[in-house]
Each structure stands twice: as C-alpha cells, then as structure tokens.
Length: 461
Image 1 (cartoon, rainbow, N blue to C red):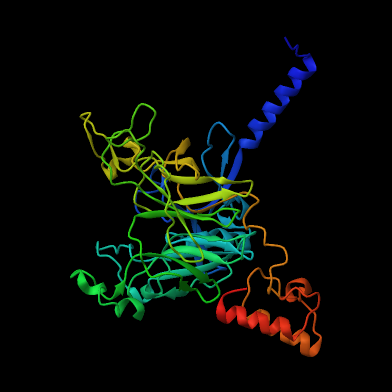
Image 2: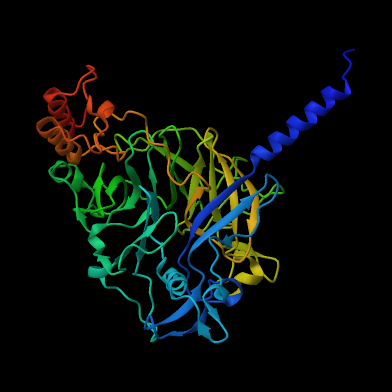
C-alpha cells in the first residue's frame, strides 16, 4: 500500500483549497429598470435636496452599477459599486461637492430594461418607454420616442450623453441581450423585430401566404449586429423566432447562446428543486445556440435547464476562463407556487415579498448538456439587465485582426480610409501595420486596400 507523507497530504489540501478559490467569481451588472413595488423593502428613492447650483433636485436611486460576489459556496447580496454615499456630497443640510452630487443624480437615468452593452470603453444603455404609466393610470405608448439611449464611461460611469437621444419603435432596439464577439470584435444581439416588412425573397414566395394568418411584417426575434455609434441594427435573418427569449451571451470561443424562460409549465419542483416533465426529463428554460454567420438556430440535443423563470429580460455571461459554463441571473420561479391554502397556483404579484415570486437567483448553466445548477437565491428582486465577470468588461480583441487598420476591433470603411491615407500621405498615426497587411504578403500596398474593399463588399476574406 502506498504511504502518503505529511507533505503530500498538505499539498493535496493546498490544491483543494486553490480549486475551491478558483470557483469564486465577482460579477458586475447594470440594475434592471423596476416598476412600482419592485424596489427592495418598498424603497423607491431617497430625496437628498434641491441643489441650487445645479438647478435640479438630487436623488439617490436604486439604478446604477452593482457588484455581486460568489465565493464558490454562496452568493452575496448585490451592492452598488461604485457606491453612492450621500455623505460624500451632502452634510449638515447643504451640498459640499456638486460634481459628486451630479454624478449620483445621473444614476436616475441608468435604465436598461431593453438591453445594455460595454464596448470600446463605453457603456450603452437602452430603455424601452412603452411600459411607463401616467399618474392617471394610462400607459405611455409614444412609438416615435420609444427607446431612450444613454452613453456612460465604462470605468467611471460618468454620463457621456445628454440623455435626450430617443429612437422610434421601428428601430427595433429591444433585445434579449447583446454581447461582443471576441472573434470579430462586433456587437451582436438577439433583437425583437417589429413593424418591419419582410424582404422580397419571402414576400415573393407563393407559399408564404398559403397560411391565412401570415402577414407581410417581420415580428419575431432575429440575430443582428448593431452599430453603437448610429444605434442601427443590421439583421442577419428576418425575425424568425417566436420563443420567449430572456438572455443572450457569447463565450470566449465566439459561440452565441440564448435562453428561453420556460415559464409556461405548471409543474411543481421535485425534491431536488428542479422541474421534470411527465417522462421524467428535465423541463423549464432551455438553452439555444445560434450561428452568428447565418443567424440561424442550430439543432441540438441539450436538455432543459431544470428551472423555470419569469418571461422578463434577464442577464447572462461567460467567464473567459470557461467557455462551457454560462452564468445566468434569473428569476427564482415561473410565477407559480404554493398559495396560502397549500395549492400549486399562480402567485400574487402584490405579495412578492412574502411568496418570493420575484426573488432572483444565480445559476450556472452547462452549455454542453443544457442543465443548470442553482448557486444561490438573491432576495429582494435584485436583477441585472446586463452582467459581466469583474475584470472582463470587454473580451480581448483578436490579435492581428485582418483589415482592422485603425485597431478599434472592427473592420469597416474607416479602415479603408485610414489605409488609403497612409498609402498616399505616409500618415502612420494610429495605423496597425500588421493588420493593414490584408493579404499577408509581408508588405502594405494598394493590393491590401483592394482586398479590404472586396471584403467589405462581398463579406468574405
């Protein structure tokens, strides 16, 4: 029998401890827009006072950037980070620091109920204004000013935009989530397409209108890229998919995944807390993979996650160190539960504090199998609209991205302009010569500019 020395045992203990430590992660996220009663303990905001230097009232609100710790065993309650401390700008009935007061007040505008993304050092938040209610109980349905777009410094979270950029409903900026693809540096999202006409290739298909319910508009989810400067989406497919998608994320391998809510089932959780169908198979939310080139959903045989969630936007992300584990911050249940009489029924929204209907949880989803593990419950309705692993705000850009002459992580007409300027004038400022050698012949010439233009026109290297 092999004997273990004390040194061997100590080494094993140290390795086990290192593995345990490696499991812990710190997540950052943008707090979801909440409606009445959505705030923990009923707290909507704190009025600090009217700042006469800034000509505005100052509030401390629930919105903002949060941090959430998972130590490998339990999930800590999210906390605002960077913190907003009234004492830093207000004391003894007066404002002591107007810059900090303005910074804190701007968090009033950090709404992201239709998606958010960090790209090139800028946080973009999108808020849908369709579900806002007037004091008289009527709903705001102004389609011409549907989406509120705001830009923030992704490091200091200072507001960069004036906060008055509104886009119409037909721009289709509502998404199940957005993410940067580390393979090409582009921002992709699963966008809900509405009020757009289908392309002629479909409209001219005589079989399309064989179904009497078919119409000429595009009204499902579609994989799109988005130009964050112009806030314009480019559809890779029409809106083909009608599932209740609640997340979208891209892993370090450039593979894209979305997840459904699974909220349609009325099944009760089993002893292990998961939900199974009549055949004993896992049910609930399901992970779907998309091909970012074609925009089409890939066939797969993954099981469901085993958990049901609300049909509301949630957040998911990957750690760059593990492309097979997706972290999902979702609702704790599907809105079903045991009522006061012990029956399994829909739970009341008004009693969410008592029945936990809108409590959330952190899950780890194995994308190779589709099954999820609930890592911990997060009480008081904390939910992120966008989430990332701390220190991984943006994926590493691919080294030597062909054609990315200006080194901004994407290939566009701006790279052609920069390359031509360099070839004509020798202006090498901001030029990545490795990337400019488009045809990889070891030199930079007009042939590279021609090849780059062909790529932009044809979409193929």
